[in-house]
Amino acid sequence: MRQIIIDTDPGQDDAVAIMLALASSELKVLGITTVAGNVPLELTERNALMICEAAGFPNVPVFRGNAEPLKRKLITAEHVHGKTGLDGMKLFEPTIQLQSTSAVDFIINTIRKHNSNTITLCPLGPLTNIAEALTKAPDIAARIQQIVLMGGAYFEVGNVTPTAEFNIFVDPEAAHIVFRSGVPITVLPLDVTHKVLLTDERILRIASIGNQMGREVANMASFFERFDKEKYGSNGAPLHDPTVIAYLLYPEIFSGRFINVEIETQSELTRGMTVADWWGVTDRVANAMFIGDVDSDQFFEILIERLSKLP
Ligand code: BDR
Ligand code: CA
Image 1: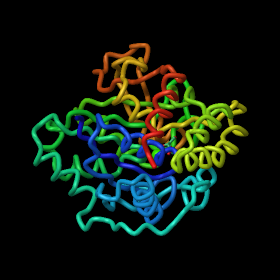
Image 2: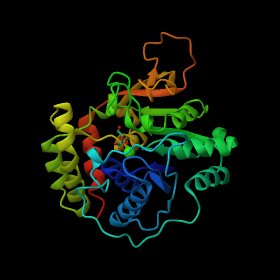
Image 3: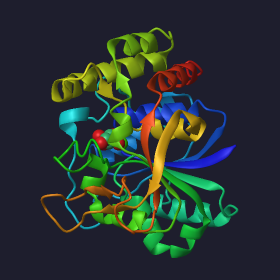
């Protein structure tokens, strides 16, 4: 069983990613670490607790992470996710509580206490916590099995500025640290997530699973797809973060290239751009498996099958 830590800023698509992981017996979710991103930290924490409780996993520990990026002011995305971050879902006050250890210490301690190469980190938001852990405890870099993250873009370029994807844009300094860390990295960029579209037909299938989580996912999808459909003119909103979990489960439905990826931190114009050497036009050393394609029908088959295992 693969042991993972999910670092997240829920976010409707983060919520679906967490549900997918919890519903998958091939994965053991050791903990969920929260970070500010889509909405401020008080909300991402509450949302993570709420999702674990609603999905029937109240014992998965949830940790408090960073409320601000390393060097910048926080930028949030209520215009996409709504005021709460989980608009569309039936919200309630979670009864489970945050752990007292910080997210960063939990990440460090967990990696140190398990055998080397047995822990995978799954960041679904800005990379602030991961960068802080790598900076505070450089010894963990050599012990992490893999970092599989949602962020960045090459062919799709940007969603929050013309040249940057939200997670990398919010904390480019953190992303720079992570991409330079030497840890094996797999990136699920917009190039992939923009192919995983929540069409009306797929939302209907999710709603028709007949369980509560299926209905919640369908309702959340209907909420944020209004915004994305208008923005992209596509026939459905992209479901970004669950691609990370689907990649862990079925890497064979994805394809990509092992290339060099650098993060723009200097220019205000292109802040947070993932400068991905897809065509191999530099001699910079490859540092990331950059995914470019996915079989989206297969992706939704997997998602629907897993969601049906939840309450
Ligand atoms: C990413 O930003 C957030 O809005 C989503 O949760 C996803 O992690 C997509 O750019
Ligand atoms: Ca996210």
